[in-house]
Image 1 (cartoon, one colour):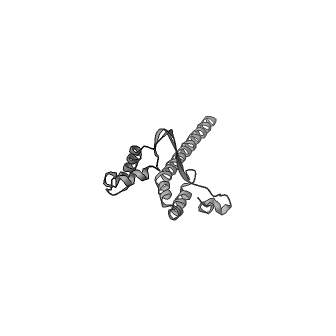
Image 2: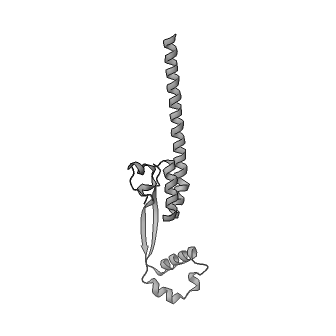
Length: 153
């Protein structure tokens, strides 16, 4: 959670708690296969990614076959992926710096994502807003100067 007290506006009573998160939604087709070959293949791929060299071929095949009877190999064919990051992007840069710092103790991984994704976004947004405000002020000043010049002439 993002605590209300982490925002500067909290001093004025104008803050509320929030929640930062990232989520991924997957759509697709799910296929189940309870054959010995499919289960052993799924275990072998799992072990290849997470074990330190141990493989299905090195293990007692009768033991594996007995345990495989209670397992179903599942394959998910992804057809669509949608992701969302809600990472305090609407906060001020100053508040976001505090949120990142406070979040480091509670959830270092999320704090890292805030620092890597939200902070650069907020800094670019703030720079673009400042540039747009400056351009508007310059344009208004030019219009006012132009009116003044017409009235004097």
